[in-house]
Image (tube, rainbow, N blue to C red; front, side, top):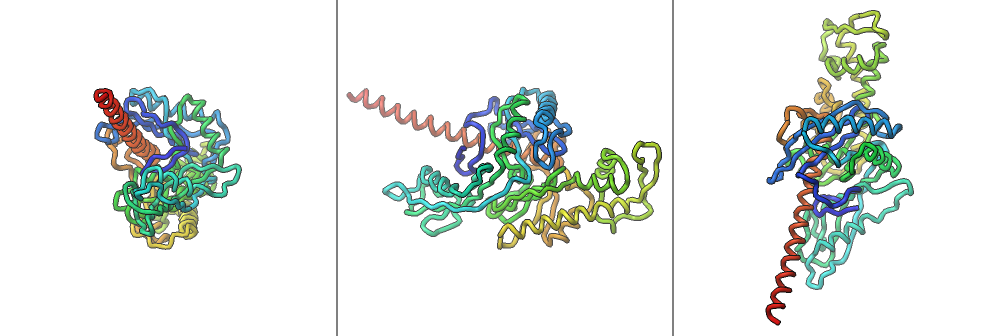
Length: 426
């Protein structure tokens, strides 16, 4: 477990600087595995230099059911990313998802240690350690401990208390918890693919790094990432994670509904969903048709786009209803002025934003990856939000590690200069 001051406490990875300032994000999903390669410039900007993607094997609703199958998919995606970027990939930040993930809000309180009352980094670490003390089932482990705000002598809303003067320091945190077995199985699959894990990162946390604008971070907002087998929900308030949840339903269920309803193969249903999918049957004219092949491909027939939408719409309404219930059960009492940002490969159905705005009664937009450069045309799609977010997340950790290294060097230099002064004096 590590503490990166000002970011969060994250499970996994050693505090070391990636070589050549290259950061890799590995998004291991139920339907696809994507490896995204980014280069961090001297100015701290993220440039995308490569991407590799392949179909996912061995996962179901974010849970690994075949470690070797997942490892093969990871290896294939990584090799593709290596060819495009021209970089040898040895390590990656790995996204974690699955219905075993949940969040808990907690507080920690400590007395300030210094006699003069000045709050130090050590005081902050002690407060966070106190907040981490919760009753944890034996089969669960902490994935992240994310500070939301600090309170000094009753004054709240403080984002950085170090250097302030007070006698009592309190911290409010969001603790992300997951099943130990699921996280370990994911780690084994990544290791079998020959990669070192820089850190496990909650998928919704990564996605938010890629799609949220600064004003949306300051105001309350919700990021919804619709993947193949899961729908990931994260609620942010005042630039801090308030709540996270993962639903066991996603875009694959829409594909399955089309395959059953139209009596066609899954691969054809997936293609039809991507090319012609719409969530509002009222928007589709009855006189527009597409041609489909029956199972076996021996017979073709025409189906109106309105019928397609009438199959898709109930499933999307169900997902939106589940999202609304999850937000309600989060315990968040305030309004959400920034609204909902949808991302992920399953959010690109026509009419989704309009239907979601009506069902959730909030502003809605589709979130595309932002704040990155390089090969942006290759990744300018919501399906890559998690992979790009993992790189942005990694770049923040890199900056923190470099700042800590500079600080250590300055301290060592100061001590050496004092030693040299004493030698000259005596």
